[in-house]
Amino acid sequence: YVDDAEIRLLGDSGTIISHQANMAANRGVAPPIPALRAAGCPVALGTDNNTNDVFLVMRIALLTERIRRNRDGDQIPGLKPQPEDVLADCTLGGARAVGEEERIGTLEVGKKADLIVVDTLRPHLVPAGRILSALIHCGHAGDIESTMVDGRFLMRDRRILTMDEGAILREAEAVGRRIWSRVEEASPVQVPRLERPG
Image (cartoon, rainbow, N blue to C red; front, side, top):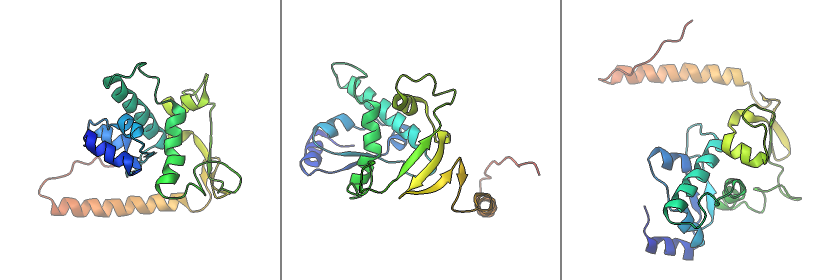
């Protein structure tokens, strides 16, 4: 949605691009990320909304940028970006986008200890010549077994430690059913719905 002159302006001003790769792909758009990078725009990956899987977002960002570069005549198709590039967009790029790169985005002494532990012994991840490449190309959120934020585990061995996940899910289901009932009552068009047993 930007032309060459606008890309130059964005680059000259150091505008941080919040790349919502999944949302763009859903709309059939491959944003001009290579041109924005070349103009000097830092890139941050985002999940847009809903329950997007960050591994899927990184995969879509990697693939759509490669498609865009190939279409735009890159010398060696598929060479850029590499998985390390999209991971940096996701971590440090995200931290930079919210002005927190001095506190988060990388694992360094003095920064918050925000990290995930990934179960890499999964059928879709082995054998892996490069584990990061396998994660970006084949991984998904279900591979995360533990999550730490600021040095504190929020999830350990796939179990949420900070809240009653079952109670929250039951409440969300009940609220969702109430909302959908109201939508169906108010709407002239019936929303198709499969009833759950029990």
